Image 1 (cartoon, rainbow, N blue to C red):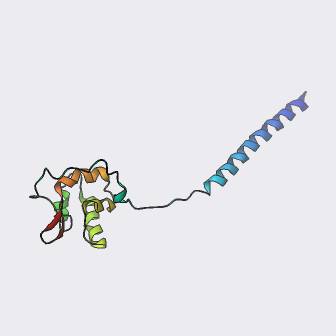
Image 2 (cartoon, one colour):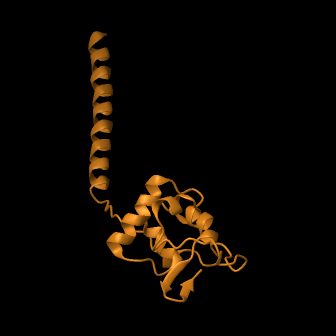
Length: 133
């Protein structure tokens, strides 16, 4: 009777070992085929059916130009603290002035929701006398 018990024990261990090795093989095959890429957000791919925020209702007085604003001025924007303010300043120093509002999505820490909050309070100055709300 003990020989039968050993036979079933070996059979059960063989099944478990087979399942374990099949799982490892499965994960190995499918894990190496994944490609992971880091991409920057692309503002032109944002869903255009829903506008960011209507700026036409606000006048241009009192708006902040992110191309010339100081850290303290940027911190006056809703949801912008010292870290994000410095990120905006470092971004514009590295890549040049913003030419449109959607370019602010490239700044680390600023997403669509954050941009929606600050759009009414910013104005991009392109050249002397020209601006984009």
